[in-house]
Amino acid sequence: MKKILLSLFSALSVFTLVACGNDTKEEKTAEQEVPEVTEEAENIAYDKDVASISIFLTGNLQALEIIPVGTTTSDFLPLDEKQYPETKYLGFTKEPDMEALIALQPDEIFIDAEFAEKHGLDKYEAIATTHVINLDEGRWKDHLNNIAEITDRSETAEEFIAAYDAKVEDVKALAKETLGDGTVMAVRVSAKGIRVYGMERPLGPILFEDLGFTPAPNVKAITGNWENISKEVLPDFNADTMFVLVSSVDEGSQQVFDELQNDPIWQSLKAVQNNQVIIIEENPWLNYSAYGNKLALENLEEILSAR
Image (cartoon, rainbow, N blue to C red; front, side, top):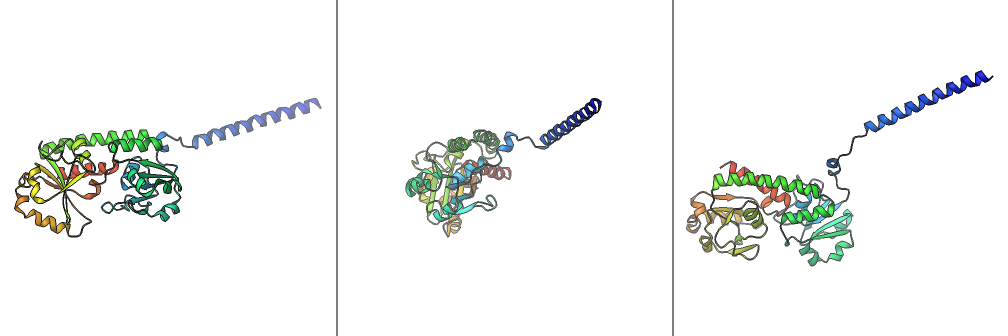
């Protein structure tokens, strides 16, 4: 009897060990089949739904690989459906569609300080956690780093800025080769008149700080973001290179520019005589954001490479 019991016990022990071994093997196999989650993979998706009350903040969010579920826009920077195929249009930043914003039920809202003050910050805070970013304080890199700190994406911001700075050096070298070291100015022509941009946003930082162009005489004297002038004042700036935007919003702007190009005052400008008038588009050049400036750099590289 004892021998029988001993045999049964031995057999049961072997069975248990085999079963445990198989379980362990299955657990290891299952563990091996689970892909390792790297820091890069964790960065792909942001785990909160974000709404942006500023197309410029949207550009900074995109640079951090965060695509808002909804965004407002400006009239000259409409929502690009190819760039943001799943982003809900929330109207113009000046008059956001609050019902559409509420319907999105975002977890977070990013808003330009100017409009937080105009609209009333409490309206947004009643919907979701709201982050106010002052676009008039610091430069676009400061805004990007600020948002990166809020969203825990500082490393992504560092990588974006490093890539941007590398592209800047490439475009700088190309600009020196094709345009020389002369002075630069940027103007916007519309049916309402001519606007010269100063040292501040949207074009000052990318042209005169990032790319290091020398501003034409009187550009530094512009105290705001831009100054409206008459065509008779253009010779006072008389830059060696002129960046020109034609308004896509004001009807008749292209006709005004066509007529201006035939004007003796325009034809007397150094940039015109030296064939150094560079036509650029409002989008992306007026999109003062990390991603907008990235696209502007790429656009300028393409333009200069074709000269």
